[in-house]
Amino acid sequence: MKLLNRNCARRRSGIASVECALVVPFLAMILMGTFELGRAMMVKTILSDAARKACRTGIKRDKGNTDIVNEAIDVMKDNGFDASKFNPNSLGSVNITITDPDGNPLSEALDAPSGSVVSVQVNIPVSSTTWVAPFYLGSGTTLESETVVMMKQ
Image (cartoon, rainbow, N blue to C red):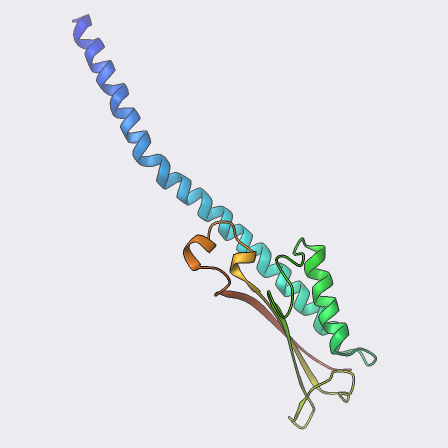
């Protein structure tokens, strides 16, 4: 009778090893997905902060487009996105749209009259923000962005 119990115990440990080998990859994928989702939410918040602070700078009377772009870059740098991950005009971008109170587009925030609408959009490639997604999405094709709109003072 004891011999029979030993054979069952050996068989059970083999089954447990097979079950573990089948389940661990799925658990690892769920764990990596959780990390990626958390990172994506963090980056979305950083982009929102950069766009909000840049737009807030753009609605001031004495600030122009250069000040807006520099403000967005500073926020991104403060959060660990250096020139290798966020570099406007080559990797990521800061898009500024200004419309005067009559609805006419303007090219410079400094010249915009009071009541103009300033819109700032900050874009960054997903490949600069995630660890796993570039393997599936390709390099630099998909953008993550955030837009903030405010009225000039």
